[in-house]
Length: 373
Ligand code: G6P
Image (cartoon, rainbow, N blue to C red):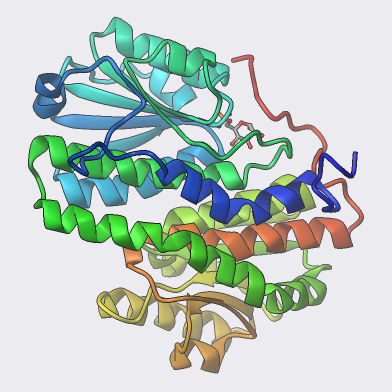
């Protein structure tokens, strides 16, 4: 009913507008009297956490893209190798698991059968499993050794939105928790990142308040496009993959997400006059090298007549010069940028689906939770 949708047209609308709250609620109540990070249910002791020498994130769909963001952050902060694997691939390839491997299972519903079977396999091999889950008491958290709940609230629309930003937030918390337990970072450094993290809900809100006109324009311009390419580097790569997934899930448009560096190794062959290409452009401060590299990709496709949609930092003059439409992001640390960058892409997918007259909450052929293998 309309009341359940909180006055919005659809659950997806409502849930995207809850992105800021989902991040905020996931950060809430995570600190003890000493200001140290705490998890929800931990049946892994500090000694075991300290001995972890490899992390494997297992998940499906959107949750797996949250896992890819987790890899960039956790490896950078904790200096422990992180692999990310689709749960159904992991389970059947005889993965190397030891008691020193931490398996992180990410799942909104906590009932995805592929992920549940993978976590059971990991525990049988003696590895510890930590769940990042949005559903209290679901099978995945129940069968894990530790749980970090995302407090995004129930997600009804089939395409995952607020759960994704909450999963990414929880992944950052896990990374900082491990850095704390393993002594991989100074307390001050952890504090600094946490402070930046606490600013993210307001930054997401800024996007929802100011960038919608640009998003609607791009959707109206491109509603008849037959295919889309999404490109990003570093943490922008999983964001590109997630943006591509959203659009194919609900607007039934053929999309491909790529690492922007791969452009010249294949995807550029697809670029023709008017082909829409979405670029996630890294902040121009700090990681100038990456910014310049993504920019040269933009120039390459522009020269071939592509229609360019860019997600870029406010005031990025270089991007403004080439892009047909820009979705601006407020300044934030590169590692945290997925929390803001995914938001206009969620809205974009929803707009496209609505313009085509589709039911955005219940896309054809898809289920909210896939409880069969
Ligand atoms: C289904 C849903 C996706 C979701 C995936 C994983 O495919 O349609 O939106 O990302 O399952 O679900 P989970 O509940 O494990 O996060």
